[in-house]
Length: 355
Image (cartoon, rainbow, N blue to C red; front, side, top):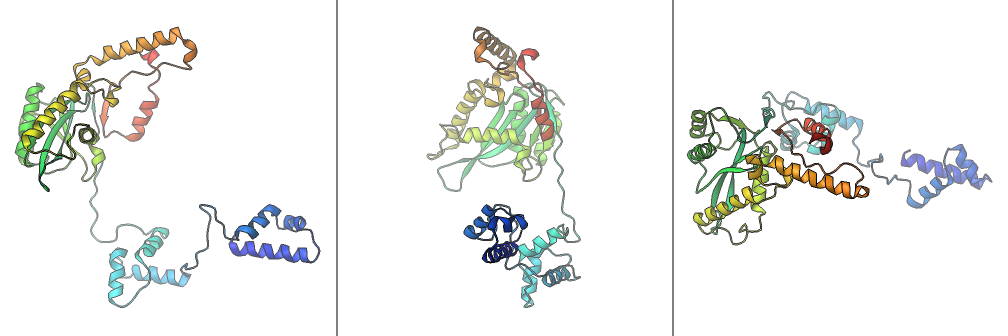
């Protein structure tokens, strides 16, 4: 009911009561309760509820809407977006509406699409990859390390194994270049004894990632490339998460910053040792990446499961259901369909039947 209709209802009831009618009887005829009527009198006839339809005082008339549609769909402006139409009209001394108003009208008329002869470039979601063991799927990226000189940074190149989260290679350089990245991937393949066509290397679309030197080195090593969509960090979540762990580590020199590149390399060396061998990774249910990488995680999880079963056996009244699920996923996916991931998580079931 609009505000004007509410005011009419109030006036009608007031008129009926003046002529001797009972208020609740008059409200029943209008299919209203006396409480509602009193609330309208007390709080006003405008509906203050969130999401309620409200009358806009400066609402466009139908003639104005037709003029706007006629103008923006004319031959002079049909290929232009509202952000260009409005200033061009202003140059001719004409104002019909703001950009937001024109966008709102286009949306309501189902005309909010790309306006122009050129078609916007479409970027499809990158191909989904999965790993069932270590050294099958790697992810890498480059991040800034602050120095004591304003505007000057060191660049940390880091490769991690998606399955185990282990850091398998890193280097710090003064610049970003494809040759430095090529040297790093070669050394990582040597350290992990990677065979041809064994591993997929995922990265974003940065210049070093797509440099001809880097791509040529990957081809010679038999490493398959995989790239994120431009400006979409969610396509490379594992490296982004690792860099966040680095920057939020208590020993990271956020205020003091790195004085020399050797200081930065010493710090990252200590961090890598801690991360791989001591850090209880929450994404791995609190085992270290090295334990996952070397395959000892299964025995650790089985032992934890036995401990929980014994605890439940000793005090069954403390357990309303199954014991904690210590099982790690057998398959780790990169850029998989989100609905598919959620369905898999819901179907994991209890660990008692799985182990």
